Length: 447
Image (cartoon, rainbow, N blue to C red; front, side):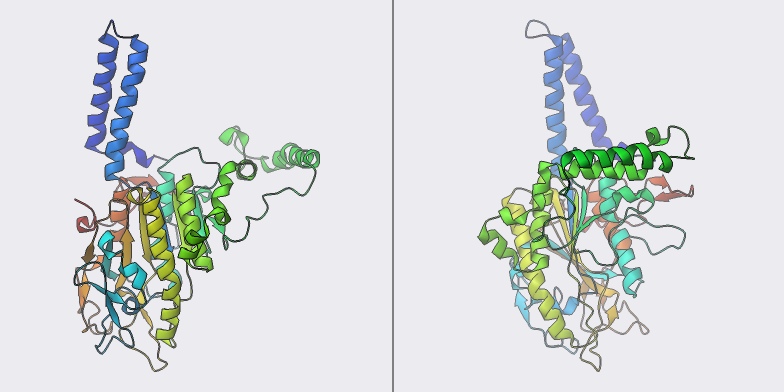
């Protein structure tokens, strides 16, 4: 499979290549200062430092997705229409960005709007939870012939490092976690529960010599049978089971596993995230990114408010607001904000109309997605919804301005990582397929 890295920086890579080439040739031709080898090494370090500085300035390295499973209401979070026929019981409050208001359920996050980008005009053609979740996580609508990779899997596929712990992690994952799809199951998100609990199965309950004997039997007997009938020397005769076992053993003995231990944080930091599984998940996400993990997804479920919408959405927002605010604050304090894109949203929004049960139903038109960090633009709101939003059968876009499709959001995020999302990869069935079929929304990115 062709690497996405080959075209990562476009023309910039040629510039940096010529810079390195020049420095190397200068080093070799220079006499009287030091040996050519030393100067070449020094020149290489200068070139890489310059290249790294340029890349860091322009591109994101890490991704945190705060996933609101069930469909958060845009009207009770980031796009209130207080006092109108669609506003419901929500009140509007000012944010740190002039003339922009949030619902009163998000007071802490409102203080950070000048550092974020908000899309209020997301549109989708999927109104079913499972299909819409797939669409939002992969940028593609479901296809019975193929499983597309989640965006975190794509980011991890294009990067490499020396991590001994998983590079793609999902915290509090529900029934539809991020998957590697046709890029391979090794890019599936590593799933953990509430970070207050230790990771399971990391400690052997047998004596070391017994463990080694069992592993030897696994290698010499069981793996031999697993390999039977495989193509000779395929992946050096390793099975996926053998590779997984090796990674697990490395993880068990790694010092990097401490990144999952939020108990080592100061009490004031712990408290700022809120005493909830989601809040602790957000703190764990910061620690994992700090350790070098590339993508972390933290899920907050329970947004499906067909009944008693205001009470349900308000309760979820109380949890989200503390976690999101503290996550961005800690990323900034730890020097990770400029390298990390944060995306907060769900699979769709809720209907402008309130139903007879006091709830709002599924609404994939004009919902909101909150973005921050990395190359995302600071203090910007894209798109607009009006209080004249209509039911879908009339004209679903009548109250939406500057609509953003799911695939366009994905293309923009992938572009922020320097990925050539138009590059075609070969799927397992031999079908060439681009990473994304969307278009870059340049207004969402810093100039």
